[in-house]
Amino acid sequence: MNNTRGIFTVVAAVCSAVLVAGAAAPAHAIQFGLKDGPGAKFNNDDLALMMARVDAGLKSPTEGEVFDWKSDKTPASGSVVSMNKLTWSGLSCRRLRITNVYGEQKAQSIYKFCEKPAGKWKLVGPEKE
Image 1 (cartoon, one colour):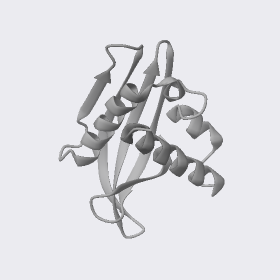
Image 2 (cartoon, rainbow, N blue to C red):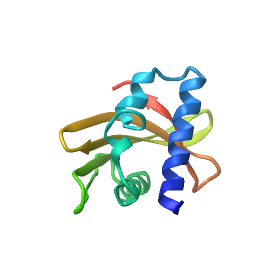
Image 3 (tube, one colour):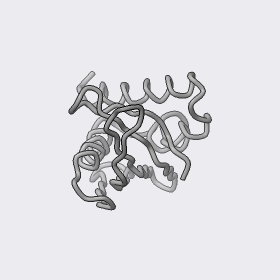
Image 4 (cartoon, rainbow, N blue to C red):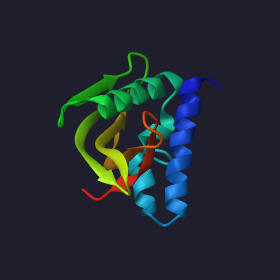
């Protein structure tokens, strides 16, 4: 298992934990593409491209900045849009609009990530658009 797959596994585990805790409807996990959506078809290189854009979106000083990505080897692509920064439960957070595509299959939703500890971003959960 390389580091990219490990990061994706952490994101999937966090989403699953959020769903189990009742903080989100199962449809959000499907929209993010972790179970039945386009993200389920991503290979390690696709995941690395997506996660690099998520990281860039979280670090962006600009609200509304778009970070597109596209695989040269598979039909995987997507984008991340940096949205507003906020404080939630005392944590510094950022909202991102994440779109994942695999061929004709597309999923898009808004997700909240928070820093805990500082510099370590954690997926808190999906948000209503």
